[in-house]
Image 1 (cartoon, rainbow, N blue to C red):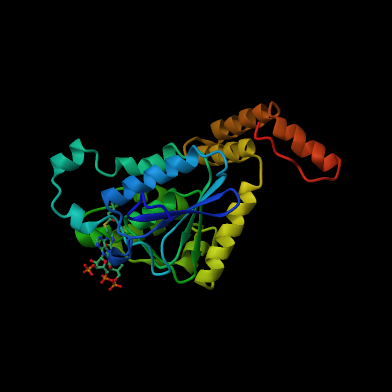
Image 2: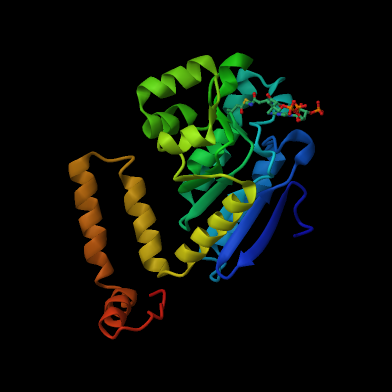
Length: 262
Ligand code: HXC
């Protein structure tokens, strides 16, 4: 871990894999502004470190993150939130991060914690993980994209029910509803499988991985016709990469590809 950080730990557990562990155990990893600042710094550092090819974001077994920091938010006024564009910096995660991000969720992923997970490219969780958008119980609403990303993930009917009642849903349900890619029976299995998937992705061409992430994300922004056209343009562009030649050449020669990231 890195002494530069107080609320997170940063490690490189596998070749090509950078891991960020939210580490504010006394507050169940409540996402205070100082924590988010550290998270952004760590993500930007991984983004600009050539050897890092996939990023894993996790919390503890008990809590991925129990939300934005309620104690920090309690006294905020409209003017201060508006003028400082409170929460906007969280979006760095989705806008500046080109490398794939896997969220490994165990325990509570509530409010801003659920929204943080929803910003990841892939969510893995335990079956007993506790997801939810309980903001309504605090007299407010999701503020970090939950009403948009959860609705895209589960559809309007379920999202409306979850956000209006504040009821949580399990990791098992998250998998059934398409929020999580996979739900695992134990914390150990979650962490091992998350690392394995990160390592698998880290083993592919950086150019192809970044393009794949970009085109899938475009599906959330564009209509089908524009999205398919965008995909085709990027697909065409990849014929200009050395790694496409290497990947298809290696297949023909029945050997492992040696990616050049070009
Ligand atoms: C600040 C928090 C916190 C939070 C927990 N804690 N969640 N502090 N902000 N979101 C603190 C508690 O105050 C307590 O500190 C310590 O963590 C342990 O929590 P307990 O409640 O004692 O633990 P437990 O009984 O196990 O209950 C776990 C829990 C509960 C069910 C997750 O803590 C809870 O309901 N938390 C709030 C969840 C929530 O409403 N999240 C949404 C926040 S709003 P002390 O000092 O008392 O020991 C939000 C807005 C998003 O996220 C919009 C923009 C991002």
